Length: 328
Image 1 (cartoon, one colour):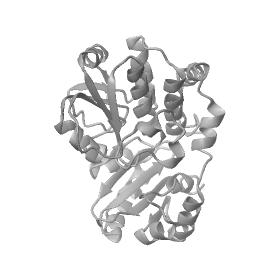
Image 2: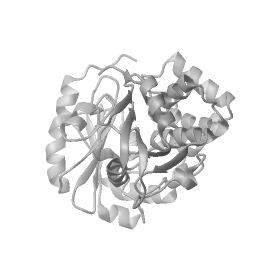
Image 3: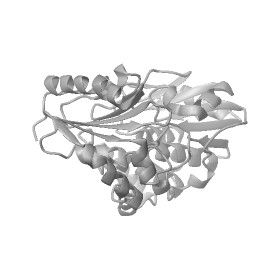
Image 4: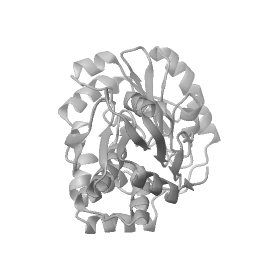
């Protein structure tokens, strides 16, 4: 998929809008919140009336990001001239706030960086070549000539850091590092952001891992684990999450692909996928209604847990068989 960036049209739509809503995807990560708040803070700084929302609100470990306190966890009222969806590859990923926003907005800008984007909405800022949605927003702000203040730089650098795992993914380039440098010059502190995101785990996550790790199994070069509702209750987790367990599993030397199956209250199963360079898990996610990147993707599918495993694991074995490892 090639880039489609309607910079001029998107800018004119924003200028004409009196009321703007910005939303991002469910189970938000650092790039989701970083792009949500980077854009919101920048537009508010220019006098725009902007609301922002994500199902369930901002995860606790990201509360340090500028503007997190103003993010709505649900939407039950409001009308907008424009909704901007950031870091979501399809409409379903925007959750209940996205559904409400689309029904109560006159236009939708689709801003994303996933190659699996379904091209929903009216105006497109979709850049699969970008390492994060925060990078897309950075380019748009430069195009519009808007200042990169500290309140903008902190969220955007958070998105860059988290989606590149600390600038370690294979899509990081010299311009990526140049962008990070300019955000640091605008007041974002790289060491603090890294410590708060990549190097931070609550004890509840450790409790969750204690329950989930006994399920970890290596089948060929696919490693899997499951997080059940009982695991979540035991750890007193107030959201469905693996706490980054899938990122831990993919570090296993013998594994090429990792998957964590997370049991939802409604009986469905959320899957998180990771792979090493040369192995593409995004098409598996896309094929079951999800999306993502070659090395990081996900989806929500029908359960129960064993049925989900039986459906997904053979597909991941095919990914391993078709993969071409990237030389280190």
